[in-house]
Amino acid sequence: LICQVGSTQLKYHLSAIDDLHGMLKAQGDWIPLGAADEQKPATEGSVEAWGRASDNPVGGWYGLRKGYRGRFGMYLPPLLEALGLVELTHDAKNNRVRAR
Image 1 (cartoon, rainbow, N blue to C red):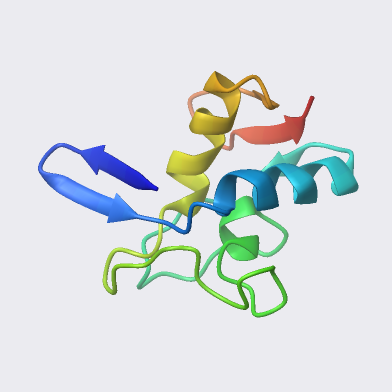
Image 2 (image 1 turned 90 degrees about the horizontal axis):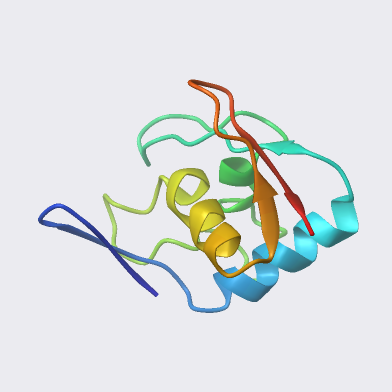
């Protein structure tokens, strides 16, 4: 899965779409996005933290390009929203997501 942000290309496992949707359905409630760059810690319990966790379906980072593996919580939830799989808040900060 390729996400083009300006001239930067972020790459994620294609399974991230189904895996994230499955996790959100299992959770059943709103989850903070917690978007953070790879070099910064992710907020515990957030989509970003799950996208890096050793116990997620890929066993770690969904991001494939070292140095650009973060921001999972920033770029994947809007894609899932566009696909009709999730609801996403659109506040100035601290946005959250849940499965439909």
